[in-house]
View (tube, rainbow, N blue to C red):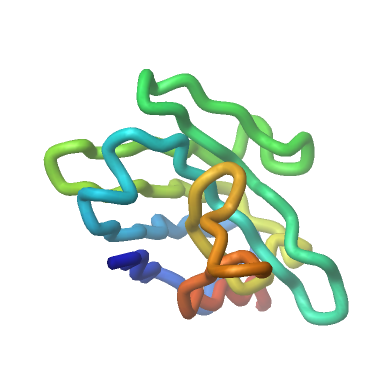
Length: 119
């Protein structure tokens, strides 16, 4: 069973911080690279950051130095710490494998969590 539950999204002012969480079922967490993605209105979904099972992380250029991804194996949870948020960071954020979990001929996605950055 696939279970990925994102949380932590909120309305925050520019320059503020948020921490997103993604609780996963153990069978889809422990042995996989986990990633955070985001999709803003009218734009394609993009990968923001990923972290391997060994803790190696990588980020898209626009968030480097501001976002940190990390995972807690004991809790089957992956986090995204977002600092110095900008209006262009506003989007629905999703967690998934890298590449995303497949469900038939399409990618599987959870409900996501909304991040709004506005004064």
